[in-house]
Image (tube, rainbow, N blue to C red; front, side, top):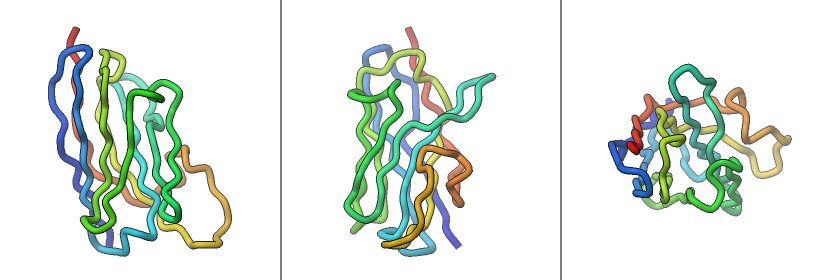
Length: 129
């Protein structure tokens, strides 16, 4: 079974930076797409970023493009989310998610919450003004 443990959340001022990490265990990390979602109070959980397993292709929500960077360290079974130039709109609980892929498998929407099988417990990120 897959387990995801996120770390690195905290409180930061507007314009500051944080780095989230998510440790993966229980399966073959290199076969899984790793995504980040976030949920602000009173809002739906929304897609933030994803990195694919075969080739490392990435995709970002328009709201974070140019400010956030997702990366993976396959040797450490870890995915990271570097968040720069944070603003209060980024305040949310950030969730790490995983989906196993096959090299020549059928396509799926990598930005959809429903596409992911495994979820971490979330890390609180608060950006003060």
